[in-house]
Length: 101
View (cartoon, rainbow, N blue to C red):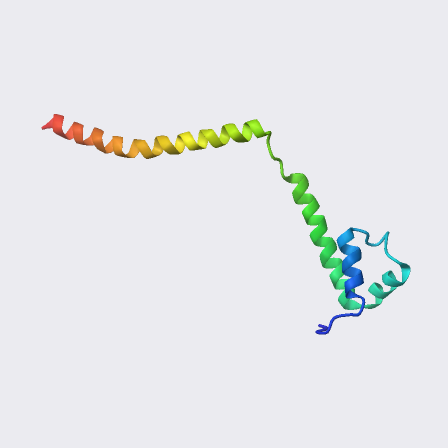
């Protein structure tokens, strides 16, 4: 592990952040990455993260705004019904107990 880093590290990060690896980078930078383990590891890790981000973004399916609003309203109503149902159940049990005596 190199603690000080590499002199080309900033250049490699700039090319990677722009998404231009390896097509839009100079030949000498590609040659350096092939020779420098630190930069090669950085390229490999960054490329892996970028691929996974693209896969996750393509897999994320957000519905239409109308459907999202409708589901949020349905959840809100269901939560309100659940909050009301608990005390009502207690009142029903109390009334059943009173009537049964």
